[in-house]
Length: 211
Image (cartoon, rainbow, N blue to C red; front, top):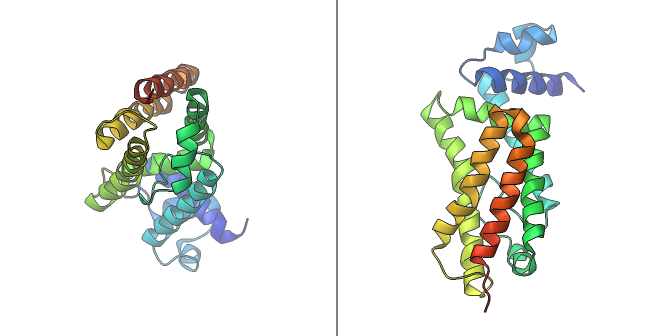
C-alpha cells in the first residue's frame, strides 16, 4: 500500500469508531507515524478524505452487486436494472433468500464494508448533511429501487397486486432490523441469518402470483 492508501485505511478506521466530527487529522496521522503536515501533502482536508472513502465504497459496492443475479438497490440511485425483472420473475424462494443472505454476509463480515456502515451510522447524527447522506444511501436508494422492481413485477403478473412502496418497506425493513441486531450482538449472527432467510421466503410465498 502507498501512503495515500494507508491514510484512507486509517481514516476509515477512525471514522468508524468516532464518526466524522469526532475524528481529527491528528487522530489519522498519529497511528501512521506521520505529521499532520505530511498528511496535508496527500489530502487538503478531512472532508476530502471522507469524500474519497465514500466514492471508493460506492465503487466497491457496485462491483459486488454486479456479481449478484438480483440486486437489492445499489445504495446510490434508483435506476432499475431491467435484467432484475426477468431474473426475479423466474427465481425460487430459496434463490432469492440466498441472494439476500449473500448481500447480508458481505455487509456484515467484510471489514471494509462494515467500517463504512459504522462510519455512516455514527456520522449521521453529527450533521444535517451527513444525516441526509445516510438516509439517501441506506434507505431512499434501497427502497426506491425495490419499489420500482415490485412495480414492474406486478405489471408482468409475477407477484400479486399491491402498493409497490409498501411492499418494498415490508421486504427491506426486517432485513435491516436483523442486520442491526447482528451489528450490536455478533454472537447472534446465525440466529439473524435464519430469521432473514425465513422472512424472505415467507415474503416470497405471500406475494408470489399463482395465476
